Amino acid sequence: MNLTIKNLKKDYDKPVLKGINLELKNKNIIGVIGPSGGGKSTFLRLVAGLEELTEGSIIVNGLEITKDKIKDYHKKIGFVFQSHSLFPHLTILRNITLILEKIHKINKKNAEEKTIYLLEKFGLLEHMHKLPEQLSGGQSQRASIVRSLAINPDILFFDEPTSSLDPILTYEVLETILKLKDEKKDFIIVTHEIGFARDVADYILFIDEGKIIEHGPPNILSSPKTKNLKIFLSKVLSWNKN
Image (cartoon, rainbow, N blue to C red; front, side, top):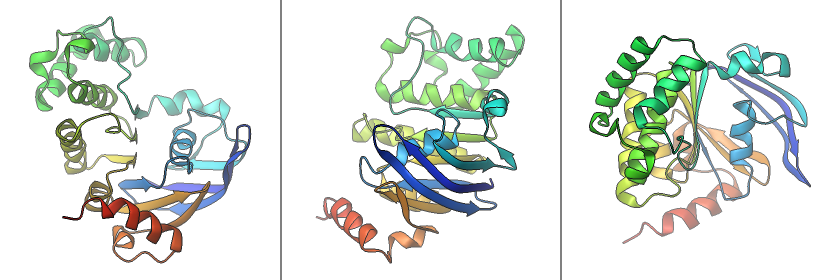
């Protein structure tokens, strides 16, 4: 993917993003890391066009994300939230086919065939007639990923998809995301799983205090140049020591 961001600002009651500039070309997987409250999720939601920016511009694959283009843009992307966003009253199968039929105008037969293929591929076929409440958190989140993938998006966005899961369920979800890398899918992932970001992403953004403090290939996690990233990694990685 190609991503150009100029002077990106976002204010709520106070500034959250404070003038981000970035230009990336031919990146497949971008990992976004940083402390809570630093602006990571806001950044992701703005690039995905889920919120309006206060100032600046965002260009994704040559398309500037503006109000008049947002509807078409949303048809080309998938978004997976921190907790699954499945419709609670619909089966897993219907959660996915409904989107394909109503928004992407795919007929029912083709929508079901495509959904069943993906559910089988990602180990969820036996659960297709269940409601979300009958699935584990990891299974529900994987179903959300399949729903986003079903529309064949140009880019997938993940906002801390494992934040509410235990280690085993986290592993299940990350394994599913890893399959997307094998299939050459482009995605941006906000994650607190630093090891996963290091091993999967081909580019890392470290966001703190509303700014991109440091960015580059994954090896910046082994040899950080900024004080902020050094402190962040020392705190995060210290819990992994034996």
